[in-house]
Length: 498
Image (cartoon, rainbow, N blue to C red; front, top):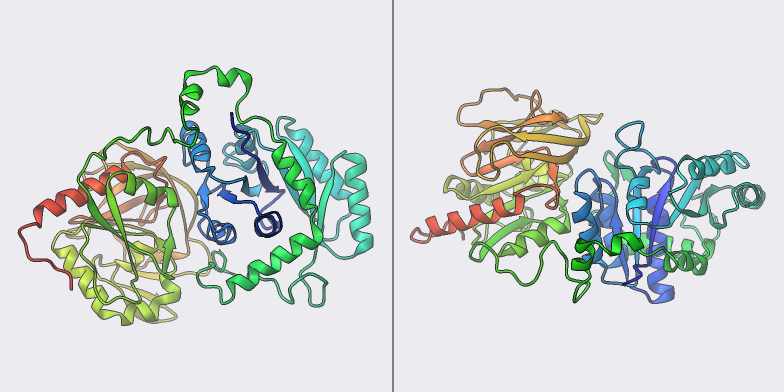
């Protein structure tokens, strides 16, 4: 039985410093201790997960109790644990969830993983009250194993001393570090905060002008201000992942039979159900929101993934299907609109029957155009939708979609759990558009228009809802099946690609 050294990094609210702490720990543990860190992210998040992956030089996997069934989530954690320690960043506050019970919260995940929790506290204008906050988190649910505290936004030695002494006295927990404010001239701290934010959170690492410098800055912060040895000791002394009672179950015996690294998500060396196909993935600075598990599941289904740039390439390569994830087409509107050849190539392939699955930013790219500051930037033009970017979020949170119409990828009646977060909205959406229809009815969430989502045209399916392959029944299989069918149909036709 492997130990799975692990930590959950939690806060008392969003914006308390979880990501900075997680990145600092990952980079410092790698450089100072020579350990391989496997990052995980709780919650529907691509941007923070991208930074965590860059810091660890390893993919960041998602652990979310709403998106992924419990058993598959545990399978995923074990199968992806291929290093020395796992750092799991929570989301929002420790107990924040969908209801008063905190369903699907970081605390729920920590208990499921039997993981020790490091709590980071924003100490702005607060000293002894920090102890009260920590004590409340400890007492609200004693099954949550809070093992230490990190102080954030400490303004000086006296501030740190009072807050540290209060927590250690009243909570009997160690203070494992104190991070100063990000201010000019602070020893061991960058001259400016290294992770600037914009409308959807942090600037993605793919667009950050100095990614290495930013990561070096938080690494130096962690080395200077965190007790790395004590934090590692907490992770290495984590409880066994399964209790004695759990270990006797047939499922657990199956998971740990033979090579414990083999995931129950893909037992043995089963052959994929479809012949090998080539699935394109538009992956560049404009479209970057992909769960690595989704890409892995496509590969397991028999797909060869072909990365494509919508900005740098002039036409599609020879592919059997296309996956366009979310991202920031609005910040790349000029480059996307000027690449007329690529958009024309994509449009021609779609008219020839190419299966395309698009999420959020991908949906926008397939529309008629983006309206930004009074100017229309042409997009692919598959859907007659013009999107604008608003100052406030148009949808934000978990979604539940019911498949209500026949479509290329999902069976009718399927219930899918996902999430949406976007500032864009279609200016000209309507319920009836000739040649187009909506396949999703949103039981939770907003969708494209009046609780409808999943707009379809020929073999194209586009949605505001992001899905995780482990929780979306039939997603990967549907993608590969459509690709295989298209491959068969076009074998006697001349290729559309350049």
